[in-house]
Length: 312
Image 1 (tube, one colour):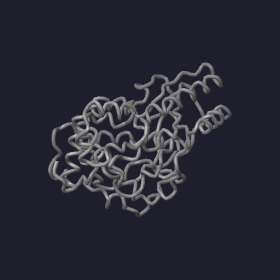
Image 2: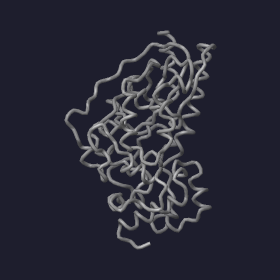
Image 3: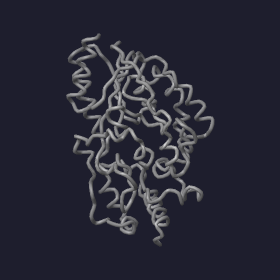
């Protein structure tokens, strides 16, 4: 399958993916880490992590008969990924354009169609973040990069500003080799994390992470000890990536749908707080921001206003 593997990689790069690698569909060496992470309650209120833990640890339960995992990386770096939080509101770089799920899924469908032309008997499953698949572990096994101390995947060529996606197939392909961990003695991400969510190198307490708090956490208020450390972030957080030295190798995305969409009508946090639900639904209908929901979006903005010293 060497020639087929080469053709698949060429197709992936031609479709605009910057990274592509292949891993064998056996048990990832680090899958046992999930049990320890869940036991520490680091998943917070993300109950689905516990519910689907058996699937996360056994890829055959996700797609029976899978033999190879094709992993791809899609660069989303733009000027919005710069240093410090964005104004008026901190919105993670990846969420300032169109929803990556839709963008990548379209490309994966084309890639899989090309694979079927090359090997008509192939069957597969396409995964873009939402499937219970530990995609960073698989991408690491496929040689796309290594999981840094901030737990994001890092590429020597691109840094960490890229999305991951996978195609699970029932044929054996030529596997790639994992790359070495190149974080060295650097602990910049641990020192910079505003809430101390990086409790030690390579270990994230998601229940303290600003991304979790602004997107997945559903309570009406944030824990007071964390709320005041969240600056003006209202959706996600980029701090650990912004300080990572490997991101000096970041390259501007070639995908126009990832570029930031500005909304001049909402130029201040107070403006954002006054946004009616109908406009929230309209403006963010094709954006990752819709995941947080209108109620929690307002909660996030109110906290950002409080941290800025402006009364809501």
